[in-house]
Amino acid sequence: MVIQLERSVRVFPQPDLLNQVLTYTFDHLPLQRGGDLSPVTLAYETWGTLNAEGTNAILITHALTGSAHAHDVFYPDDCKMGWWNPLIGPGRYFDTTRYFVICSNVVGSCYGSTGPSSTDPRTGRPYGMRFPVITIRDMVHAQHKLIEHLGIRHLAMVAGGSIGGQQALEWAVSYPEMIDKVVVIAASAALTAQGVAFNEVQRQAIMVDPRWQCGDYAPEQGPDSGLAIARMLAMITYQSEEAMEMRFSRKPTSREAASSPTLNPDLGGRFDVENYLFHQGTTLARRFDANSYLYMTRAMDLYDVSEDYPSIEAALSRIRSKALFVGIRSDFLFSAAHVRWLANKVHLLGGNAKYVELDSPHGHDAFLKEWSQMTDALAQIEL
Figure 1 (tube, one colour):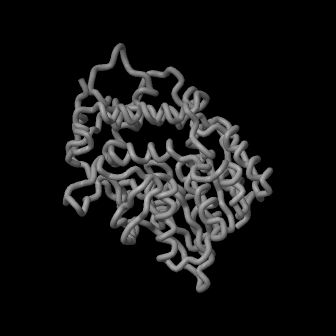
Figure 2 (tube, rainbow, N blue to C red):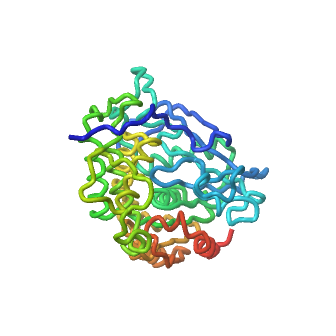
Figure 3 (tube, rainbow, N blue to C red):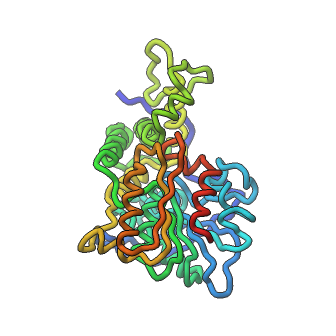
């Protein structure tokens, strides 16, 4: 039996309400898998000033459960306040004194953009599982509408990691004449079968929770236990064996015990790594929408850069921008070998592509931790 986590009413606010979150709403978005979504709202944040020519803009694309809050002007050195804070700001790689930096929350998420928790105008109730299937290409097409709305004529760069890296790659293929440079971090042309398998187990954990109610749960009564377990599994794929041994080994927990998703008693004590996973699961369940998690992980699964093209070569040969591909030595989810293969493929097709690898034990999450290495890697494609 799955027992619901005990906690207060859940909302999905932006991480820091001191920063201005803007929204743009447009009439409709034709979808890759058929049909359309109407209307569509995107939440976004910007830093810096757009030049008169509309050509100094940089688009940052976020990861799975991220938001538009990539940078925090009030806490610029705290990476927990803005998830790419050490890379964005005056004098940093994404220099806001020179560039107009944008990050938008993607369609399907729950931080201000249209997603499953949004109100369906046809029924007056949340979409739930009546929300249409969203793909990475749909996310990018929606971002393109935002970019046009902001008066941007050309993007100096698109950069992102993980599902954000998939978006960056899709930008380079879908809008090749609009981008000068693209940075694809910890992402490949398509997720492996193993990656799809891990995501499906996460989705099943959510849907088996009796409070999921086929997606028609009330915000304060959602499938928190299932979502917490899904997050626990995801965190394992974001780490590496090396990093877990360094941080946890087989040590018993020495900190305050986090509630397990089932609230069941420990069997013979608790390891520190278990407590960490419980904490991560509970934290995500308090801030993220379970249906959005289903749709976002599925978008990651469905992405194949070659879809609707005769071949992967036909798709990748469309890239005109300078391209930097960043792999991570210990990445378990998007292996460095797959990222390197993608970079080599673009290069062999005549593209201006370079591959850089982070020598980090921190697995897939290294692009959110290794700030010095990330800065050095990004410097390989000068802005």
